[in-house]
Length: 436
Image (cartoon, rainbow, N blue to C red; front, side, top):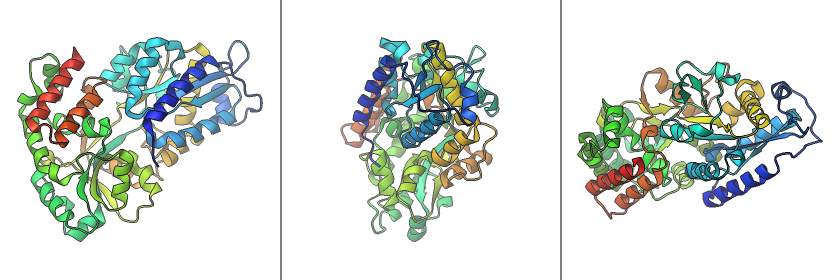
């Protein structure tokens, strides 16, 4: 299931422009039926009698095809709103949004996703309030905190998600490795040595090359496991503390030196990384529950689950909900109401909810969902959360828009152009340039 991101990004830009130019397209063949009509009928018909065209762009490559199916069903249930999916931008979504909102906000996507933290602050001027949606009333307690500004809600959580080391239980058993005994990076190194002796295993651990996977998720560990994360990040932003001088970062870099020989050096794409895991070439991959769709495609025959990244004795996986649906406040009134109607259908109507849990394979952050059919990795995330073994997502506090530059510094390290000390110095330069 290859995703050619550069072509897809171009597609997104072109489709957005076309949608903006053709905002009054009609669909005379559709007829109202089902619950979506109730949601959309209040005010989605534009003042000139034509359908309001709603465009949506989001960053999750793995759910794009399923989202298109959901949109098709929604469009068929009512005749007053037409939702159009734009090409997915993946890690480049921030850049795409910056370009589109910077040139013509009224033509930018009607529904878009961004992270919380610095991305929320960056795109807040383009976000409509969502507190009046039906979906907002069903958000689980406390899960909307990072989308609230001055008491108003500006985002609907996409899902609860978790990442860590997804490991091949059969390979571990074959190699005589007890996952419960891995309590430190040194333990992980020793396990990796045994795993790489197994037939077919090329590398014990594989990291994907995309910037969020190569840097943002991986460097969440040292920051999240500090006792004073926000204070430390605040000092870095203020120029009062350098990354290379932080004891936890120096220790993490030293651990990375130990692990590096047993990794794929982050040379594989996300698709290749998951495929390699499915084929037994990698015993572990640093990934999240969103990989479930790809694993299903490969019809994996062995058992797998999450293993905590054992930094400083950590026993949890990283769990958060930093990704939010946003509505463009510069879109027309009809488009904004139509966008809210679609999101309400997706999140509160049983037909839409089925896509969220069974097709997107997401863990809902809302009440009223049937979660009995969740996939194995989602159940694992739920288990760690229920056992209070959740490491928080703090990468949304990293400087917005710098993930590719951070990842480039990681590439220099993996390729041997800089050592771990040079890596931290390079990350410091990127960080300070981004917060200027």
